[in-house]
Image (cartoon, rainbow, N blue to C red):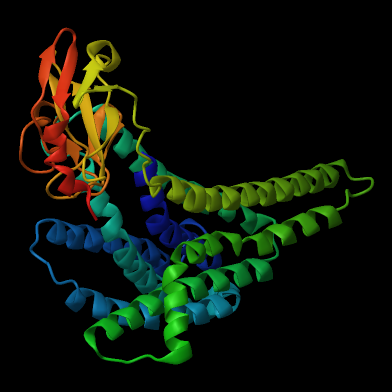
Length: 424
């Protein structure tokens, strides 16, 4: 669930914040008093989602296996649209003030906003949508607890982006319009940098440009700090949050007018709450994209080897030690000095799976147990419990053993013969 959450959140947060900002800055009137072009922003969002869904479907079915011919022109258009939107954000207050006297300019602003939203969403969402294809592991039933957890993580990621955008949107009534505009401009600048970085990286890959020295190191820095760029998209709204707090402190209750006094108190409370929730949302996004990502990328640690009886070139492991159905790891030093590991697990039906803590494909990376599954540490493949003890695939390399007198007995000569699997 966490893996889906921290994958979906970065892909949806930027578009959600962009849609929110442009709706706030270009929103005027209600009902018939709204310009018809106000719907263009929503139309851009719908077209972006539809386009991203189709593109993701074509990628998932391998109809498109070379994405450059789609991404290249899309990124060029994104960069151009980002620059145009930054200009629209700067002049948005002029466009919306007495817009009926210069409706054409507001229509142009809404058109630019709609195009930018469509391109940004189309660029960001395909990877998010493709997360839907990994809800069910090959060979697993359709409805499992793991599938439901992955689906929940996906929905929480999308929901968190929408909630963060709504929280920040609440400041439109308390923050000074100037500072909200500054925050929106900073957000757009960060999105522009993301698109430009992706475009330059693609141009470098296809050989259209060559970078050296400072420009190359700068590109590498932006690529390596993508997560922090996304986090910064939320933190830029601390600017209007601080402005809301300052405005709240400056609000004084009107003397002699109870209605105005109550209105001022309510406005002050709203300003404080909007700022506080914005800070909480920013901290939440930061934790999710730092600690959460670190947890999903955390390398599993193999359990410590257990003790067993080793007498006269015979290793003996009692059933009582390994009959709990969990993975048990043991260590052995071969005659040539190689330190080896082997594993034993009780399978369904009472049989035991015995093999080296290594496989033909991934070497001596080892196996670990997670959520009742035995997983290869190197390739992250879950091993079918019933096949442990048999050759093939990523299964542990089997070796001969005997079961007698309530124990598994292993001739160490059989282990010595396999020591090469643990040599670097």
